[in-house]
Image 1: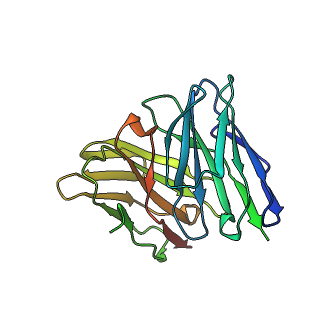
Image 2: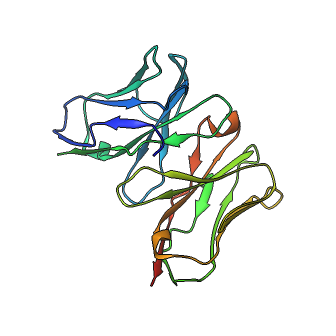
Length: 111
Length: 113
C-alpha cells in the first residue's frame, strides 16, 4: 500500500454532468499529480499541484480543473462530461524531487 | 513520433523464464526512469527508479538505462505467475520523478505455471 487514497473507487455519470474526484496524499507529501488512463493506454498527465499552486499542466481542456488543500489533499473536477472522459483517473503523490506513488484510481464511466 | 514507445505485447512466458521488457524514447531531456507494475483495475505500483544511465538491481528485477541509445530495459529473473501484470515504463525530465511523468503504453505480461 502506498498511503495514497482515492475516492470514490468507481462511479457512473451522464454526459454533460460534472464530477469531483478526491485524493489524499501520502503523509508528508506536498506534491500531487493527476493522470488519466484510458483503456489499454498508459497514464496521461493532467496537471500537478505543489503547495496548493498548479505547477504544470498537460494537454487537457480547461473543463479539467483542480485544487490542493492545506493538508495537501486534492480534488480533480471535470465539467461538461464527454463520453471520451471515461477512464481510470489516477492520483500520485510525492515530495519534491523524489519518485511518485500512485493511488488505486477512480474508474469513471460516462454514459 | 510519440515521446515514449513501448511494445504492448501481449507477452506470454513459462514460469521461471527470464523476461525482458523495453522502451525507447525521443526526448533527450529525460533523466529519471521508472518502471511501474499495474495489476488489472489497480493503480500503478513503483518497481524500479533510476537516474541517468546505468544498471540497478533489486531482487529478481534489473533496470538498465542507456541514454546514448535512448533505450531502457527491465529484466525479470525466475518469473512467477504473480508477475503477471502490465508493466509501464515512465520518464521525467526533472524533479526526481515527481514532475510530469511520460508513460509508455504498457506491456501485458502473462507468466504461465
